[in-house]
Length: 135
Ligand SMILES: [Zn+2]
Image 1 (cartoon, rainbow, N blue to C red):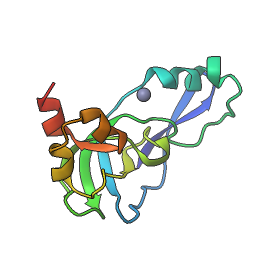
Image 2: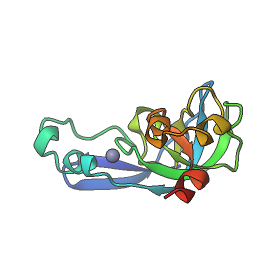
Image 3: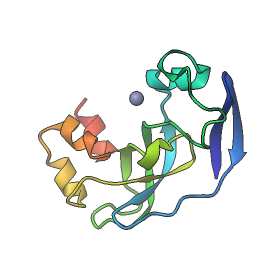
């Protein structure tokens, strides 16, 4: 798979990396969009609160805001083909494929019925179609 590697301050590389495997309770998401968060800027520049960060960063780190489609699932209720907003495990979100852990209980229906979007997001994943439809 393709992944982004922050090699040194203000230098990134695109490279091939192993595709992750889902652990029990997780899914693999093929990312369509990967956000660059304000918190990533210091990781990119090595400045501010990230001034003492070690370079190169781990491959794929520290993206944490992804939108894509579930392509493998080890979590009942989160079937392949589901469009999701996902927070990757370990913040390895600068990658084509990510591991993500849906909210417990392991059910898309539970997330869709949550009255508190933020609470559901804190579990790491939401069905994107229903979430974006509420905006
Ligand atoms: Zn962020």
